Length: 201
Image 1: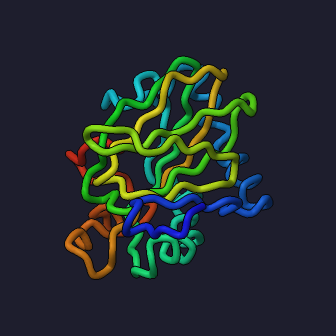
Image 2: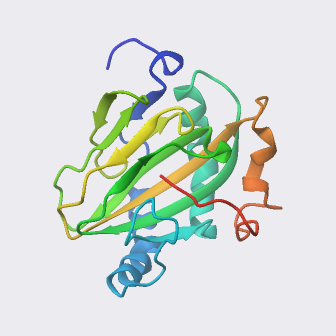
């Protein structure tokens, strides 16, 4: 990768961010989500990923927020971060991620592939309002750290049978969005606050 910084590009790729043993553990945790998706359960209502199944703030996955936080802080240039929420999604065949930007709880976002029915490429696209700037391909355990509020991001329809992604979201501890710590919940693992806007990648 070039010597440019997160401040310049608004994204960074962390290869092998999740160790193999921890990735295997996350795959076991998310296996029921794959089964629920195959049955058409836990379908998202917000239209960002029509037909996808998801978990918000699943307690065994919330711990990954703190595990990866030091690496994410280094990726963004050393800013101290506060965790907001985790999100796991299973995309079935044909699902696309609608082009969008994220809400204030996603000041710094991470998308991390967990597992899939095959190893075909399925990049996430990043761009400004007017142009695409990158198509990032990730292998299980790799992580893309990006500015979810600033960069438009999307995925084309999935050709594989299914994919599971884990998303981790943060805000800067000393920034203007610090009030979103824990996504305004009392603690990690709690259900979302009533009336909270939809959660996205």
